[in-house]
Amino acid sequence: MTATAPAQAQAQAPAAAVAHFRFFALEVLRTRRLGHSFLRVTFGGESLADFRSGGYDQSLSLFLPQPHQDHTTLPSTDEETWFGAWRAMPDEERPVMRSYTVREQRRTPEGADEVDIDFVLHGEGSPASSWAGRAVSGRRILAIGPAVAENKSVRFQPPPGTDAILMYADETALPAAAAILDRLPDGARVKAWFEVPHEDDRIVLPTLADADITWIVRADPGPGRTDRVLDVLRAAGLPGAEAPYAWIAGEAGTVRAVRRHLVRERSVDRRAVRFTGYWRLGRTEEQLLAEAYAGESPSEEPDSAL
Ligand SMILES: Cc1cc2nc3c(=O)[nH]c(=O)nc-3n(C[C@H](O)[C@H](O)[C@H](O)COP(=O)(O)OP(=O)(O)OC[C@H]3O[C@@H](n4cnc5c(N)ncnc54)[C@H](O)[C@@H]3O)c2cc1C
Image 1: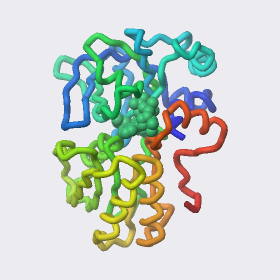
Image 2: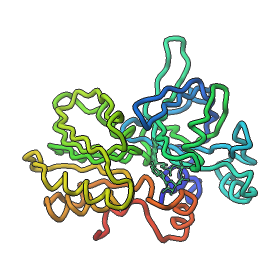
Image 3: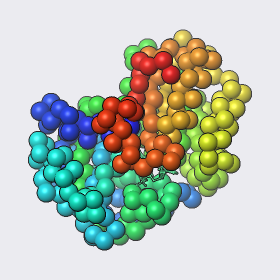
């Protein structure tokens, strides 16, 4: 499911993707705890001079070292050969590939390029979450990220004429939602539901938009979580709008249910709904990747009849 655009593009259509995505060497500069569940990792590195985030929900693919390794190394970072070389590595040596969001890219007054990524710390046994929890300055990883700002891993694309934006995000998509809100113009009408595991995850979200945000603090971490989200949505009024655009991201089952609710119960045009499963309850990203390559589990199905 979550073979994300950069990685999929590299793996499936290398020639077309060359200009849009490339490998970047990232070095941890510092970390900062945000709220209860989030850790911001700030990366630097000379190659970031060529990094071009498109903003909004720009994602990238990280390659993280195994617990016994300090840094990520790959046999090849050539766009035509890396994927085969990465797949051929022994399991215990192969860097762990995971999708994350560029929360912010900036150039410091001293001219250094930095990228922030906000990791959800969700479990010690999970490679990416555990890596983030152990990250210290100087650790080096690799990433496939954007080399041009207009690229297909910016999924938030409201069509012209959109007069209201509906958003649902769980904690994994909150960095993307925050980056979207950062960029929306003054007065843009937004109705958003953000689902988080803990009261302290209700972080401040600076925006010029006219944003009505409802926080849903999760009581049930299991499958019952989706019903609670739907209860909150069903009880909510939507902004009166002719052409709403919906952006939905988070746990795949909840994402599908929210999309279905908006399309079937609220008559939102299915073509104006962008939905992405960021993870799936009970499945690691390796399992989802294997399913995606077997054609079993697309992460986005804008035209399907879910
Ligand atoms: C486009 C995109 C952008 C993303 N951006 C971000 C981001 O900015 N920040 C972020 O934290 N995540 C983000 N994610 C989600 C992240 O890739 C997944 O949560 C991923 O599974 C984490 O890898 P892991 O190694 O920690 O866990 P995995 O090894 O993949 O999973 C191990 C177990 O943990 C479960 N699990 C995975 N994530 C969570 C979670 N958050 N809470 C509870 N259980 C979980 C799985 O179902 C599995 O059972 C993004 C995903 C996509 C597709």
